Length: 251
Image 1 (spheres, helix red, strand yellow):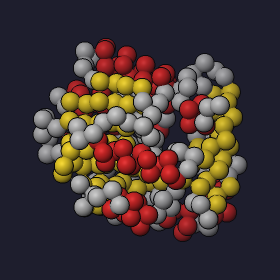
Image 2 (cartoon, rainbow, N blue to C red):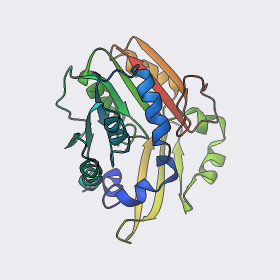
Image 3 (tube, rainbow, N blue to C red):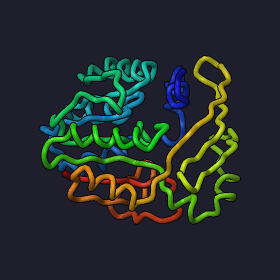
Image 4 (spheres, helix red, strand yellow):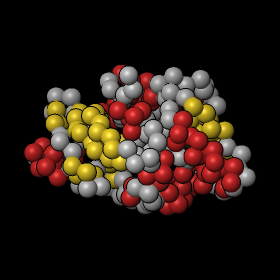
């Protein structure tokens, strides 16, 4: 039986690329490039690359990129885009919980909940972080975005659930304060016009949890900021109004 995130990203590539949260690619890549000092010798791994929006833009700028994703249909779209632009990107179908890479990359990115924190258990989410760390070379850098647990904590859980509407599709939410998991029903139409109803399960994290998890994986420097779509910056302080947080960690 497929998990909700596997079902969501089947026949969803076209719709995904038109979502509001995917429109900030250029600004996000500008930030990623600045974080590696525009060094074209850097090898980059994009975990949960989806339709390849970051990987393709990085490759266009001359960077060596490997992109992995669990969804064949999303990867097919990524491969098509790369081929149309004559770009050499190593796209692979792979599970972020079981990656083969070790000490190979200078930068690992997971943008827009690319795998983490969508898994059904905390242990699975941790495996993704562990594999990201393992894939990095010494002094390598991990940059990812994830759901900010301060948001539902500060806003009452009831208000958070009442207001949690995505692209006009209402979600019947149940936020568990013991597990920080948001269980919701998501209705949408896929690329083929089929109506789907999914039971989603997403894990929110507070900054102290993220810091502890990354320290346990031997990251020496961990910075957490507010996450603005298309405008990643070290100057944006994380607040209780940020739905996501931007995490930058270095081994």
